[in-house]
Length: 176
Image (cartoon, rainbow, N blue to C red; front, top):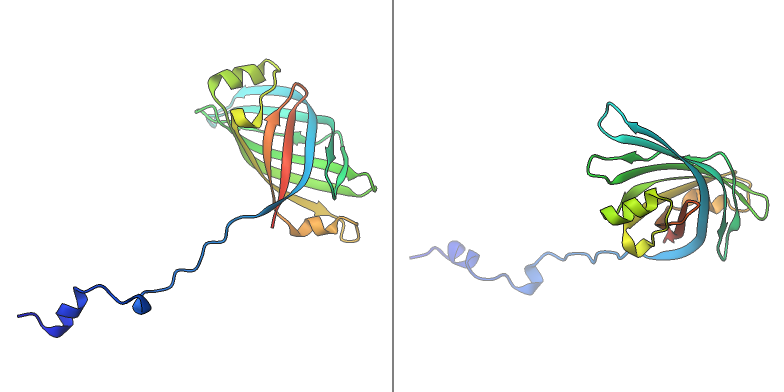
């Protein structure tokens, strides 16, 4: 014979007794701008840490969106590490100047994972669309506290990349 306490454990719990699981928030975004960056590519090669070091020195570019447009200033760069599995770990720092004259520091990290044929095409200076590879970034900004774009100091953005003959292009979205 089962004890009453043991018997109650074998029955399903009534709905009212089940813990409530909060709904998971779905990420929402708002388009911030399209950015095209011109770079001069440099290759260091295999380094002792086990990856291949590259550099993309920024020579210019443009960004344009409904709330924010301007120039990518020369001198920034991308210092990616090519992992042994051929994926790229991105480390990018750029200076931007808005059409209104504000200067921004933009930094992002990310990943670029592409099939072998796409990697070969890009290495030869060819283009590759966002649909051909996984090219994603996590973006942050710094602006002067008195700048018209100081609101960028308080957001996180994500980018979806593509590759053109002159360098990378990104659709950048503010995470809401």
